[in-house]
Length: 223
Image (cartoon, rainbow, N blue to C red; front, side, top):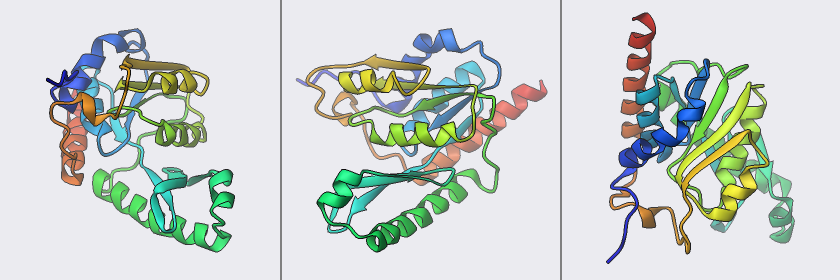
């Protein structure tokens, strides 16, 4: 019998709430969820602490002919990170890297436009940014997100995830101001292994949750 840690992503977000209490009294805190799976997790945290919720899109740059192997990534804010060892090891030309980057940037922009529905990105400069995902296996997307967020000069950057590979949590400690990994089971296997329901989060799910969070935050601010 498989022992799950969470019923679903919403349950995982609820489970994170108590552990995030030490960071909940900071004014100007913003939750940036990595879509798509991080959004239902971040939504639950935002609802409890009345934080604004936004998305921070990261797109993997796959090696041509080996799409599952990442040679780098791009993120909101125009940052591009390349793993030069992978690029050189597979002999990927600058032209090929640029072509993959162009295609992924189109998808990144499509997602941002669809998710936000013309709403501008929440300000990050001098804000306390909490990056949230549904789990960390390699941590590569989260590392790129951290590098990109730094360009906005936030007051602090933290990471909050329900489940993660233990050594990845340790590595990320040196990248940010704090890391909250609720569970670090071993053997880890995969993020989805620890969820009873790990169905894909859709673009529409993301859009709906962001809209609800935006309305709730605005109503709370007015009140």
